[in-house]
Image 1 (cartoon, rainbow, N blue to C red):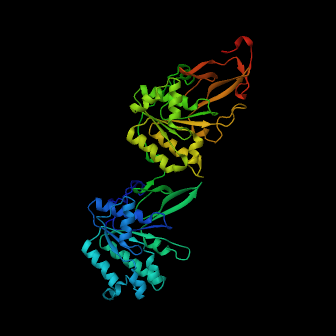
Image 2: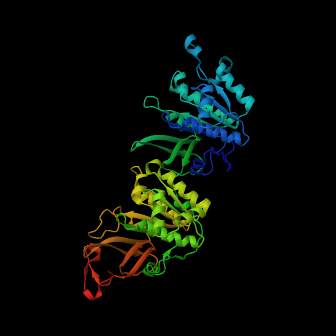
Image 3: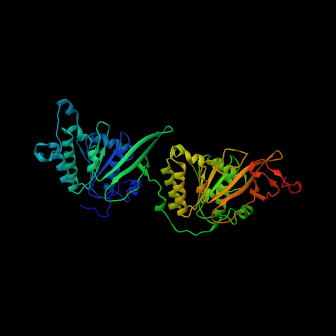
Length: 490
């Protein structure tokens, strides 16, 4: 039996990543889940991956008729032309004639035409991959649990001994469990469906994989017009690349002075402040400067539409549309409830690993939190941030605080510990006029200016003024001038 390093790809890139390359050949695996979870679709991907590799692939169906399977597969964009199907599902004659058959009793195959059909097909085809859908049907055909266990085990061993890698589907229930199948197979893949905020979320978990390590936990998945897609959980330690430690300036001289040159590459910066204070614009300012250096950036807009961002930036003289047209900047609208954390993480990975993006902005954290669907925000944000840092990507996180004025609060979601830099913007009420101030609260890898400055977003772009040294109580939102002679710009 071949248990070496060679793997059989499943036909699903995400699942192969979870399995560290695919299934170990000439072993049996169980894919289990309730109705509609995608068991058959996964099995068909497994068979088609074999066909694409020139391997003989056999589907043994015990429930659905061959014509129905091919029709359903075609509706998902899966062409089963190269897959042989052994249809053992009951026909209408079974009901009319009250037939019964005790299948897979290998001790007396001469009297069992069903077993003979399997043996004949295996001998004729010599399949490298076999998918049995659904093996739990055998339980209803066996006289008792012991007989089922013996028949199922001998059936699986027969296929494996003839050189096949076998995938079995199972639909367990409380009254008809599949514990015996779980013991006799070499790996188990669980598929689950759960409704979250009115949206169906699907997950895949590998809970057993003999002879190999694998990525544990629940991984997001989706059934699409092209079949199944699996989105592995992000494991930051598995991804790393060298990068140059250097400062990334904003291009606004006064802000760079506050940051003692800029923010460091491969760090996380939180841009914190209330709605409308300029967080997104400030983030894009860093990207504008990066574009001039020939770097690519991407903004994931969870809370604003592309047209709104483009219009606002153009109104202050930022040539964002030109940056988009040249490929220096991508602005991606993200509907939070449409994507799971795994899907979004894969989207980011593709930008980084395939397109060489060097700055990523998540705008904003409240929208990103909706993709969690009840999961812990900090856990997922920590994994994504650590991955990007390992890849030398600079991360900007736009974090909205609810209070417009009043006592200063950096963040409201407990994420400040994740960041290397924290730049805050806030509104000030000065003599009945609403103004804006900017400050740096944290810079882990270097020193920074501790003063606050007035910031304005004008038709000429982002403008940062001189330090507000003549004010006290700025962080309360209602500052007072210390001395009339030191009053700042009017």
